Length: 515
Image 1 (cartoon, rainbow, N blue to C red):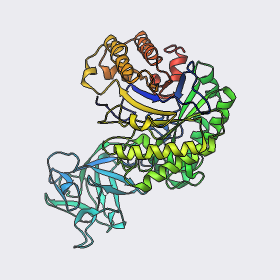
Image 2 (tube, rainbow, N blue to C red):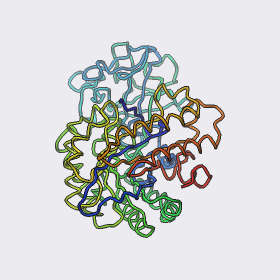
Image 3 (cartoon, rainbow, N blue to C red):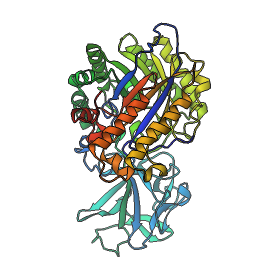
Image 4 (tube, rainbow, N blue to C red):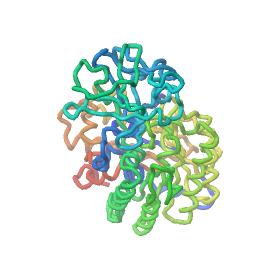
């Protein structure tokens, strides 16, 4: 069946089904043991929707990496467009804005930016021509592709774009956009250097927060966040409320701590060390989850994509770089009794992440884990997007102690749009049970289920009016009952979140869930 997908700040329920092959070496699986875990999302890999205040101190924070901008000339009345999506001239002749008319920011500092177009070139001055025509031809941003956005303080949607030659862009005609306008402006509709700007999309991940604060401020902000957002008392709370494990999302840059490549900052590895200390103290297991791989495996902010691009797995060097991260993490924690599993990657997205690349990486990543541990389970996330939920079975069947994650979503399908609360609950009991039974075969792999339960945003996305606390309690109960049958366990997204129902801590303290 097709698998729906979306970014985490939008989806309401994410259900992760994983299949673990039994194995007899080292530590045998205990059939009576079930993982009851919570994700520590938004801690070591930033997701702005989980803790928006982390971005509050960024100067000019409207313009972070990956922000999608569209510009409409006030004189021509049409949008700037990278003709053919890039590789040639920039024009101003589109009546509506879509992909070719959308420019993704690469932030240099709070005032200077590169603009990346649909085909991944950067707009800049035509240095091979008259030096003032605007083109989108360079695959690598240089000084000639560096611009400044000047906003009207009385109307922030009105902007001028200052080119590296010191002049402003202007739409002379629908077919001619140049950087040769000089002088001040009254911001009127008669000024060809004025554009109406629309922010069509934003990203708030690890790249955005660290590059936004910059190399001087980011280390201070991130280290304070890591040392205060998740603390020992949280592990005590987790262990004291019926949970026995945590799933900890981490980023690839952690393997280079304490001096990761810019814009990332060092310090997250110490936080993960603390997590293992606390887990040992309170008897909790840890699943290390490589949530953000080099190049981004899905283009989402929670995999630390710079601008929405997905570039993981395209080369052997990239795959080997990712394997090296797994090798580093497993070697560091293999001797800890708290290490329960290593998830090789989270949510690779098809078709960008091909099955061939995924299989190649999973085999190499599995071998990297086994080099250091014979007992840690190895988790392989099935791809999001178009795919066969059983596509990794041929690989996993030959790898002892492997786990396959398949993600289901209870939203972003038309079938949920008009469902009542009861119909959604029935869907869990009927459809999800059937899906679980289908992939849980006799003499087959064990199963792992992760449950992500949402708040009022979930109710609103269902378009159910007047949903009560009891409704959400019943929905949570249904999921716990169905996914509690899985032979490996389940995990809740996430421990803390400003959106209350996304926070398991809040849900427990307020009586929505009792374990």
